Structures are given as C-alpha cells and as structure tokens.
Length: 445
Image (cartoon, rainbow, N blue to C red; front, side, top):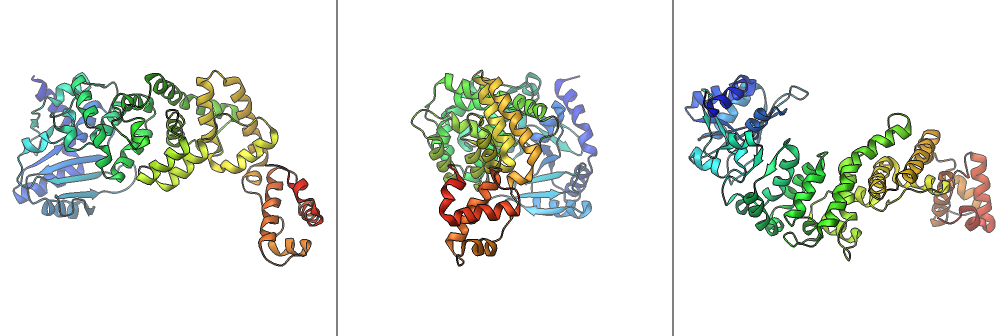
C-alpha cells in the first residue's frame, strides 16, 4: 500500500464525525468541493486529541456554514469580515464538544490554498466525502519524519507571526525537529513581528507559555533572534548570549519540579494553583540582558499589547522574588502581598534556587510559608475588619477623613503581622496611635 493510501486510512474515522457529516451533506447539496485541512489531520496522524476541526470549501462558504449549522443546532460565528470568508460553527460544550472553522476559497484552487499554509504538516487536505488525500508538499512524509518544514520560501514573509508559531509547534508536537532552511527563513522574518497585530502576538505567546516544555521553545526563540528582542521592542536583533539563554531555559525546565516539591512540602494540595505561564513569563523578564531593567521591559511589552493588563500586573508581583523571605515577619507580609499568587511566586523562586544550587534554603523557606498559610489562612491574606471607620474615628477623636483611612491601613498591617487579633487589641492599637505611638506601633515595613 502506498504511503498516501496508508495515511488516508488513518483519517477515515474523521469522516464519521457528526460535524464532518453535516458539512459533507451541506457541500454536496450545494454542489461545492469540500476538504478537511490543516491541524485536525496533523493531530489525528500523530494520535493527539483535538476538538478543533478545519475545513475549506471551493465557494458558497456562508451557505454551506448556515446549512451545516442548522442541521447540527450549532452556533454560527462570522470570522472573516470583509477581507475573506471564514465561519466558525460551535458545537455543544463539554468533553464531547467541538469547533469547526470553515474557510471559503472563493474560487482559489486547492493547490494555491495549501501552498499558502505555514508548514507542510498543515498543508494536507482530505476530500469529502470520499476521503482521498491531497498532499502536494509531502506533509505526510514530514509527519512520519517528525520535522517542521516551511511550505514555501514565502511562508514567513506572508505572515511573520509564523515565526512564533514555529517555536510553539516544536514544543507542542511530540518529538519534532526543525529543518535548517526553515530555521533560516524564520530568522530572516523575525524583525517583521512588530508589524503583526498585537493581539495575534499576544495569543501566540500565551499558547507557547502554556506548554510544559516551553524551555525548548524559548531556546528556539533565542536562535531566531526573537528572545530577548521582542521583549525589548527590537525583534530580529541578537542581544543575548547563548549562555544566558541557557540559564533561562534551565530555570524554565525546573519550574515543574519546583511545583511538585512545593506540594510535597505543603503536605497536600496547595491552597491556590501554581500559574505556570505567569511564572515562566516572569523568568523571561528576569533574564533580560544587563542594562534592560525587567520592570521597564515589562511595562513596554504591556504597552505594545503583548500581555493583558491582568497578566502584566501578576507578572510584576511575581518577578521580584528571586529568593523567598526567611524572616517570620517578612513571611507574613509576603503571603499578604502575594495573596493567591504566593505559590506561583514560590515556584518562580524555586526554579531559580535549583539553578543556583540553593535548594535547601528554598525548601526551608517554602515549607515555612506553607505551614504559616495552613495555620492562618485567609486571616493573613485578607484580615477581617475588626473596627470600622466610625469606631476608629471615635477612638482617635477625629472626623471622617484621611487620618481615619491611614489608621485603618496601619491596623490592617498590624493584623497581617500578627500583633492584633481581637477587637480589644485593635482598640488598644488605635488608642496608642492616638497617643502618638503610631510609628512604634506599626513598625518598619
């Protein structure tokens, strides 16, 4: 049996998918050519789970989409706008859910449509309904060899975002390597990333940093002159030594073990999940070249739109923690300031400690933090209000205003630090403030 016919047999099960059958019936009824294309075939060949289906029709895309959506009871979303015809059918939610993206070739030949795709492993089509395989760029061969190869020499110039996608797919697809010429083509287009819409860059980076083996992807970004260039607003400009990128990748690889060790030290499930993508991003900013302040770079990346406002704020909170606090008072302040992010910051510090051979000190500090949180829980993260503003005003003899606000803030910190635990202690604390002892009562933070 020929390699193509053998591969086509792997894809036969897709022909029986509920959404594919509805698409096939719609295309047949309207007399248009339809194919499954791209990632769904790639993932099926590799045995990877996928709920996303991609298809293309020769024309009349909207009619096909409406026909299929009606039969499936699916929600239809227009994706293409004025520039091109693209439609998304969204099936039922849950484990059996699926999404079908349908592209209208609008008279363009199938060969031309496949040639414009990023990599050969995505430039494969399966005809509906007969299951004939179309593979003009030997994508099946590259799937067998597990190699990422650009479909054409213009793959990256047509869409520079594919430079980032190359790194992400290398990590996402098991056992894959990069073709040397494809690597060179991608590097030549790295500088053009600044021309790509920021939300597309943000989404691709988000996908990359969710991957457990992101260290391999970041190593490729270094080779492509994307890291640290994109972080500094200058993609395509080599600005980091290979050794420094090696240090970063080593720490990225240690994040997973650090999270596992933290769970062991905590003696059970952590109170909050470790947000691995945030910890990974924080490490990339921590390893920027000398002369590039991490905080300034983070603000610039956020301004460019490559991080959401929420993620930017979270990374900024995690980033400073090269080491965990060892002083009991500082531990309390750490838990309060980090809140739900404290396990993430602890793992960020743990990855750095492992790379610097400081594991014992990190483990001792991390275990102490876990024990402290287990003992005091929300009382230290978000202390209950023991006195309200009116009560504080009565003790101070002060009218509503900034003085009461400052007193409430000092009282809260006294609770965080464990010096005030009851209403009576709170009243005594405020009374000392009234007598002029606020500085001594609050201590230095």
